[in-house]
Length: 343
Image (cartoon, rainbow, N blue to C red; front, side):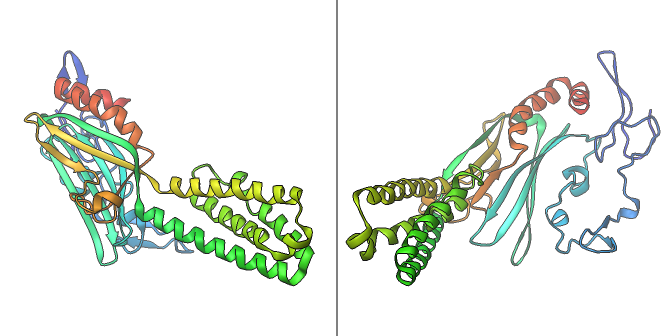
C-alpha cells in the first residue's frame, strides 16, 4: 500500500497491477513517492514575461491572460478540490466563449475523472472576472451530444457591411482626387491602383481572412466606381475596349466582395450537452436563444451568458475521445483509467 501524499493504493484488475496515481494531476507515481506537481506552501510562482529582468510574482492574476483564463491548469485539483480517490483522466480546452457587446470572454475546459465530468470556464469582463462551472457524476452519464458547425451572425454582417462601405467611399474620394488633379495620367493611375489593391485579397491572405479580403476588395471597387463615372473618360478616352477593361474587373470584384461579406458573417459554433440515464440534459454548453436573439446571436445565450461559443483546436479531439473514455471508465474502472492515461 502506498503512503505518499496525494497517492492511491495499488490496485489489481483482472490480474493487471495498476500503479497508484497522483490525485492532483493523475500522473502515475511509485510506491511512497511524492508527486512533483505539488506546490510548496500553496503559492503560485511564475516568471512574468513582461519584465525585462524576469521578476517573480506571487498568486495575483493581474492582467496576465494565462492566470485570468487559468491556462495550463487542471480543473481537478488546481481549481477544484478532488473527491476521495478521484483521479484526473483527460482534460480538453473545449471552447472559447465571448460576448462582444458586453466585452466579456472566457475559455472553457472539459475534464474527465474517474468520478466526475466537469466543465469550467474562467473569463474576464469590464467589471471583473467571471466563472462558469458545471459538474456531474460520471456514473450517471448515459451519453453526450457535441456539435461543431457554423452559425450566421447578423451583427457580424452589419459590421463588415459598414466597414466595406466606409472603405469604398475612401477609394471613391481618393480616386476622384487623382483623376481631377492629374487628368488622364491620374485616371490611368487610378486604374492601376484599382487592380493592385485587389491583389492581396487573392495572393497573400489566407482563405479564411474574409475581413481583410473585404477591405482590399472594397477599396478596389471604390476606385473602379470612379473610373465608371468620370466624365473625362466617357467623353474622350473611353472606348468599347476600355469599357471592357473597366467593367469586367469591376463586376468580378463586386461579386467577390459580396461573397466575402456574407462569408464573414458565418462564424464557427460549438454545442455540448451531456445526458443522464434518466434522459435529463446536464452541463449545457451552447448558444440557445429565444425571440429576437435567435435571429442574430446579439443577446446573451440563455444558459451560458455568452452569445458566442467557438470551438478550439482540441474540440475535434474531444469529439473523438469523450464517448470512449466515459464508456471505459464506467465498464472497466481502474483498468479504463490506465488505458487512457498511458495513450
